[in-house]
Length: 256
Image (cartoon, rainbow, N blue to C red):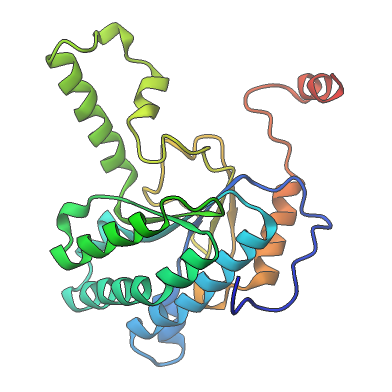
């Protein structure tokens, strides 16, 4: 990508790579507080870490990168901080969209858009339309998103189909529910990285993360760089992903 950092990250020790990487970008406020700065300064500093991660994911050939930018619970924060977060989100999209488009990045936004101002909703639609045909990295931004909201809206759509006679209750299974969730057309996350020291997923993609590997780091998001990503990918490469099977069964599958 243009304005990319450093040299291309070596693939040594990083295979297999996740097809889909999801990230909870935590620690912006604490980063700012530790420097005697207002909390919004941490969010602004975190934008550089987003650039780094998007660039590295694109270079490595990761197919999907999903970033938890603004949760449904974040609406509970002080009004001033929410306003700063949304303004930063809008300005960052304005500034970065063309560069991402030129580098074939496809942008998707998931979440409850009804809570956003019309100006932001229009900008989200514009960016998605601009990049819809791109064939490179799919960058998913979760904004005003919550896993419980995602499941509830899927259940509502399924219930409507039952009421209208288009679906029988006995036809409802996990595959049907999955087909009504956000990201239903993309592979589920293989790896979740959460920065900032917390050890929880905080209502992020709670259905889709069922079999993801969970990697937690104490690094605060504004300090997250290429070396931190490498450590997470090396850890992931060493995991044995069994999906309910035994190690012996996996060995037989791999030998076949």
